[in-house]
Length: 333
Image 1 (cartoon, rainbow, N blue to C red):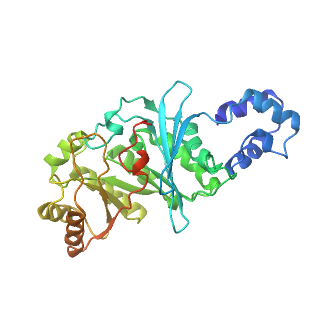
Image 2 (cartoon, rainbow, N blue to C red):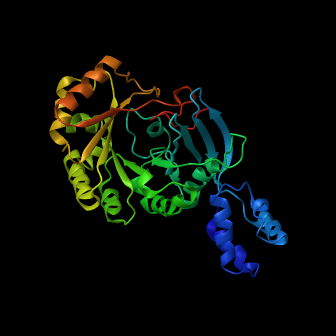
Image 3 (cartoon, one colour):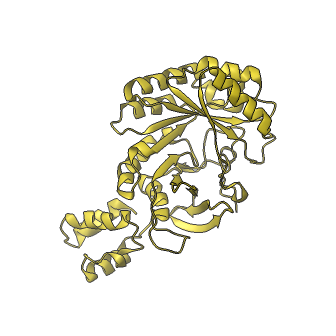
């Protein structure tokens, strides 16, 4: 919700300061509205319901995948589209993929969000309301539901809106998502990496790398011309030295583009095995001309990285049938 408006309203109503803490405690626990907040006077609950929207986002529609993934499309007060995803795993994890911007200005060639028109940065309230939507169990029909992990890998480049992202992260532990179970992904926006390095919150860093060759990476990700990979990796090393937490490397597997034996060796050459863990991502269709690498090619690439001493996993694709998988968020039905 708009916490600035909440505080102003409580002040106008002559309420003590602790009322805001009460409202937040209920909200973080998954309350459906002010009416649920039974330790607030009824007159106050009614007044807040009339004057303070319970969410800064409006739900446009929601879709559920065959694998249990849920994607919500929201709109902001000025009509900007935002998507967020809940991923439910067999081991009980309930992980959120949150957006930091409406659209994205960085135009990575394989990403559906990059093909959208950029809207604007989201506020901290709009980011937090994505998480609160799923904390309330919206769309699941059974009241509040736990959430325990969050990744800023949805729409937008989080490091270009880091102050709002970090402000939202400050509150996520109240929902059940600790800082150590929160990760922020970046295409390599160095000022943001350095700012994250210096924050006291032990939030994980993930780097979208996708090619170890500078020329190819610039072709796939134009931001590489502004922040070359060599400089980005130096910033990641600085993060590691300060935080002592490994950096996740995201590498989308594109057939005939970045999935060869030679390119696996190139990747191994630039990554320090102490500092980085590689996550290979099967490419999900986004309307681009790229094709997904075969499972055989992915397995061979993984094996070569492991021979070079790197820790490697292959990401489990979830929500592809509802355009909720990695790289697919583009506000489409």
